[in-house]
Image (tube, rainbow, N blue to C red; front, side, top):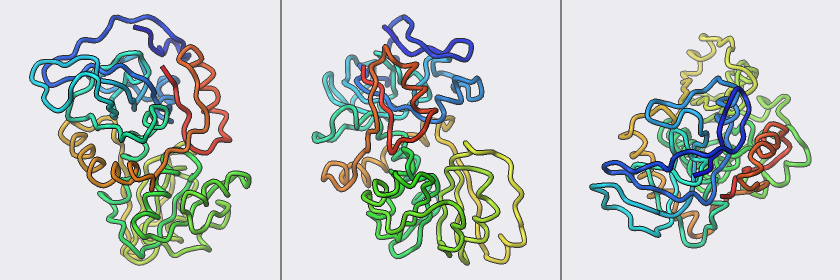
Length: 313
C-alpha cells in the first residue's frame, strides 16, 4: 500500500507492506483522513506514535470501508462504512483498527467529512461533557474556535443548550464560527471581560492561562487540550482556590483500548445521531489527494482556515 510517511522531519508518500488484522481487528480501506496538530508535531519529531501503532505513518483519524476481518470480530461486515480514532497510521490506503474503536459512518455523511469526525468530536465531547460536565444554561468559552476541535466544541456546546462564546483571532473567520452556533465570537484580546464562564476549553495554550483564571466563574472548570502557542504557564493557585475552580488537561492518543472504546461508545450514543440528523456538521476547509500530502501539511501549518483539512485516498 501507499501511505504518508515521515522521514527526517518531512512527509511524503512511500510504499509499505499491507497491514494484516489480528484478533478482534478490522482492516479498513481508508477513503479520507483528517489532519491534526498532533501530525504536525509528529513530523517535527515531538509526538511519537504510541507502542503498537506505525511509527512513521501519521494520522489519528480515518474513515473508510471494511476490507477484511481478523479472527473474533463480530461488530462489522466487509463493505461497512466505518470511522475511528487510531494511534497512528490513518494516512495510508489501508489501516488496521480494533473493532471496538470503530464507529459506523451515518448514511448522510460523505467520506471527506467523515474523515474529520473522530478525533475532533471525540476530543471536544470528552473534554466538555465527560471531564467538565457541561450542562444546559452554563456559559462556555472556546479558545481557538476556528480549528477542527474548536468548530466541533462550538456545535456540541450549543446543541447541549450552553451559551457559547468563541475566540477567533481572524476577523474574516468569525461569521463562519457564529454560523455554527456560537452566541458570541470575539477577539482573543480582553476575552475575560466577556465572562464569567462555567467552562473554558483551552485549545491555544499557555498564553491564555492567566486570563482564564480571571474569566472563570465560581465552581468553574478549565480544561486544556491544546498547547500550540506554548506549554508552560504561571498559575495563580490562590485565584483557583478562591473561585473553587478546577484545572484539567488530557490527550486521547495514548489511552488504552478500554478507554478509547468507552469514548467511541459515547460518541455513538450522543454525537452520531446529531450528525445523522444534520444538527452537527464537519466544516471541511480543503481536501488534498494523498499524492499531495506535503502540500496538505503546509496548508495546515499556514493556518487561515475554518474547520478541517482532509486527505482523500
